[in-house]
Amino acid sequence: MLSVLDIFRIGIGPSSSHTVGPMRIARTFVRALAKAGKLERTARIAVELQGSLALTGVGHGTLDASILGLIGFAPDTTCPDEAAAALERVRTHGRLMLGGRQDIAFDPATDIDLAGHVIPDLHPNGMQLEAFDADGAPLSRRTYYSTGGGFVASEAQLRRKPKDDRINTGTRVPHDFGSAEELLAECARTDLSIAELILANEDAFRPRERTLEGLDRIAAAMDQCVDRGLHQRGILPGGLKVARRAPDLWDKLSANPQSNEREQLFDWLNCYAMAVNEENAAGGRVVTAPTNGAAGIIPAVIRFYCVTAEDDACGESRRTFLLTAGAIGLLYKQRASISGAEMGCQGEVGVACSMAAGGLAALWGALPAQVASAAEIGMEHNLGLTCDPVGGLVQVPCIERNAIGAVKAVNAARLALHRPETDARVSLDQVIETMRQTGLDMSSKYKETSQGGLAVNVIEC
Image 1 (tube, helix red, strand yellow):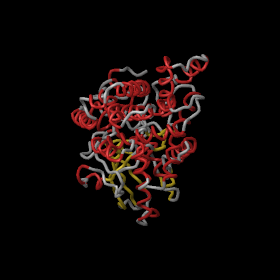
Image 2 (cartoon, rainbow, N blue to C red; image 1 turned 135 degrees about the horizontal axis):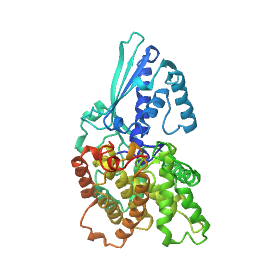
Image 3 (cartoon, rainbow, N blue to C red; image 1 turned 180 degrees about the vertical axis):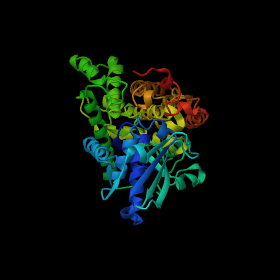
Image 4 (cartoon, rainbow, N blue to C red; image 1 turned 60 degrees about the vertical axis):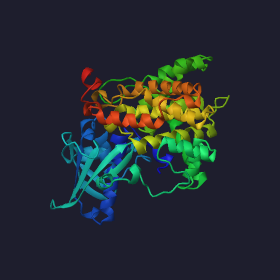
């Protein structure tokens, strides 16, 4: 089993697969050089970005992320201002402090190859790194893959088939499950809610207090991202000239004392979701939920619903929400994919909508079967959603798509609660498998390559 704290990770924008993943890969490669005693002998590093990482890498910040990873930056601790300063030093001086220890010459224009024509057979997000000594002799060459949501894998790991179609991390949990059917059966057997069952499983990874601290840290980071996005104005970087809209909407809602009434639900969810994804587009700190491109949906729903009567944040309800949503995210990660380069946007916004719907249903007192039904509805009506970012930027249609996804999630939860437990005609397992098959059938031009859809039909200014 994976941990829910693997599903929710703090990182930087604009993309978990194209920014967070490559940063982690580059950092891992350098640490492997150091472990093998080859770092001090390294005089040159060559990076080849393959497939989707190359085709939308410039707009997704993949080149900068790769450089930062080589220097030693980690996504969860990176300060955007410090990262910007480090990148400026590399571009100004043409040198890079590899792993913070080994000074080498580095020119992004020649040392990073955008090999969009290379389509890896294991995953569309391939990344090959090579190290050379001062005489040009090769020291190491490794290929990795950024598999979505900040997860990464080596070539050897992806070629090694998991047993019983399951991801094996070596951690045994008290309530093992590999499908929604097994999860619901275990809930019925133990008389536990999904959140309670997942929390018991998390005890196998770390002490209970550390898990609760981790969940609170994730919720706080989501809140902080919303708050930043509500007050940062201006034009988003990248050349599309997209203006931040969340602050103006926030001002309008805040000016009306009655604006928090439930009939203005859409406005509030739109505001919160766009605030997060505008921050993501600007390279700010966000939580993969389960990806950066879909990072606004869960925080928006949590921000609106996980509060007390006095509008203060309610820690217990946020934990319940994240544990339940995390369980649903684990199912998608283990049985399909959360990578836009594999599944299209149904694997990002669709999965986030499904997770948020299940989390909200649990918060409203839904039984486990109703939680699964809410998650199923959330995905069913995102099936086939393409990933076609204009200009390779995580802006159009990504920002508004998160706002729409948040509203869909709430409606999915409501529909599930109004439906009898036994009345569902489509199971969560069936919709996850349908998403997987749809993603496999989807043309590659609609899977984070900017070679189809809006990306080719919108005239860039």
